[in-house]
Structures are given as structure tokens and as C-alpha cells.
Image 1: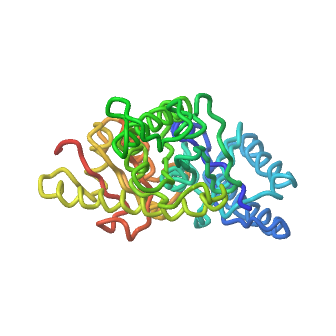
Image 2 (image 1 turned 180 degrees about the vertical axis):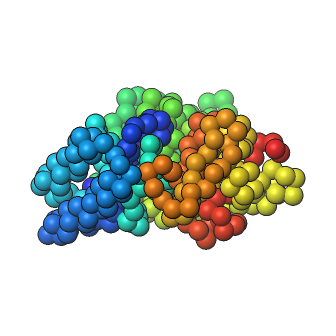
Length: 373
């Protein structure tokens, strides 16, 4: 089982605002196999040594350096922490604090040192939806199942959730053929199923309000269509599980949900690439780092795709967004693409971390702009 700690978007924004005399960002591959924990610790020690050597070469104050290395030493000695790992580990440390995130995706080992954290690899964890809700809906029963990347699915307890369609409308059965206004026959069943679906939607609002977690519908036939017609949650995915959930366990629902999440992610990327192509002809899309940096500084970025692996060292001017590239990576520079992503997020842009093959250019990013600059 993977044990992951995925940062929320508010946590990510908080980390992006951290400034210190030394912010060390370490990413390493790990394994969930507890017998390999010592190898993971050794790898962290090697990467921490690289950070120390870079800081020593830059003349970093010795007392502060000792405090920083103590953070890494304490983490390396925490046997319980290393017993439960995932596929990658992010360690973000200053002389005064340390944060760790265990991640499901495989990241390339790297050490970055600056006055701010290198956070672009964490964006991948935020970009890809590792969790989802599955609404298992039939005439006979309804339940909401929460699906996780590393834990067994759980059924969410909801107040006011109807037991089934018949009891939701005060009937013993929906096959009542006695006329009551227009509530009879197939038309009457549709009316009552719509009433049932509205009650389910209302019960879900208490849990889903304000969330961005994808919702997957597991239902069949006309009830599936009726629920989609009354659904008020904006993150209900177009793809669903087209099988009767009465016969499906929570574990099987979770397994069926994962390819639907994968497809939704790929569709989102494809839609953004198509939008990029349309905007490029009107000066509202760019793969140029300098243009993207200015646009992010001025709040002109609407959506931004960044390559999770590409690192370009330099600085970005706080006021103009002008880029100054660094000849070599050192503690006086930072990841330019990382900084562009941070500024885009601060102005409300959608930022997605992707693989190089998902980008239209070779610069490490693609920006879709709100207006031409």
C-alpha cells in the first residue's frame, strides 16, 4: 500500500510564499517496501550532502548551516517515518523548519537551493486527481463512496440521504399503476425518479459544497440520465460506471473509477492544447519563457502547462517579470518556470504540471493568456 501526503492547493500556495536565507528542496525516489527503507535513507543523506556542499561553497553562515543539516539528520533517524513510504518523497527544509510529502508519482532525484522552495514537482500531485467520490445510485439503494490513491475506499455517511427511490417519494413501489394526476405509468415513474434524484443531490451538497474533487456516477438506464439532469455539483465527470451498483463492492467501484479519472485528465490536457492552438494565432498563447514571465507578473495568464522535469535556473524581476538566466545552478538563483507557475497561481490561473510530450513546445511551459501582451 502507498502512503501519500498530497498537499492541498492552499498548502501549496503557503509553501510558495516561504522565503528564507536557505530553502532546500529535495526530491528522491522511494519505495513502499519497508525492507528497502535503509536505501531510501541513504539516498536522502547523499542529496542532503550535496545541499551542504553547495551552501558551504557559497559561504553560508555555519551556525545556520548546522541547524539546517540537523533537520535532515533528525528525519533520517526517524524509523517510523521511513517504514511507510510511497514512490517519491519531497523534503522542503530551512534552518528553522522541515516539511515532507510522500507522493504516488515517480519523480527524478534533485536538489534545489534558493531563497524559496522549488515546488514544480509537487504540482504533479495536485494536478492529477488522486481521489474521487463515486455516487452509487439505483432505484433500490444509494451510497456515496470516497476513493483514495493509497487507502481502501470508504462509504461516506450522509444525513438526509434517501434509502431508495420508493421511500424517497412516500411509496412502497414505483410500479404503482393507479392514476394520480399525471403520476402514472412510465411518465409517472420518471417524475418520481426525478424527485428521488433531487433528494440525493440535496443530500450531497452538505459534503461536496466548495470541493473540487471529481464525482463519478455509477448508475444505469434512465436513472443515470435523470440524475445528470438535476445534478448541481460542477465536478461531476462526463464518464461514469455503467453498471448496476447494487452488485458492485466499494473496492470494485474504486477500481472502475481509476481509468475514468485517467481519461478525464487526458481530456483536460487535450482541451487545453486545442485552446492553445486557437489562441496562438491571436497573440494570446506562448511557449516563450520571457513572455510567459511578464504575463504571469501582470496577471495575464489564464492557464499554464509546465513540464514537471525541466528546470531553468535564474531569477524573475518582481516588478517587470524580466528573466535573468543563471550560468550555473547555485543558491543565488531558482527555478524560473517554478516562479512563473507561482505567479500564475497567485493571479487565479489554472496551472497543470505535465510531461514533456503534453506540451506544444520545447521550452518547458505553455501559457494561454487572458489577453495579448
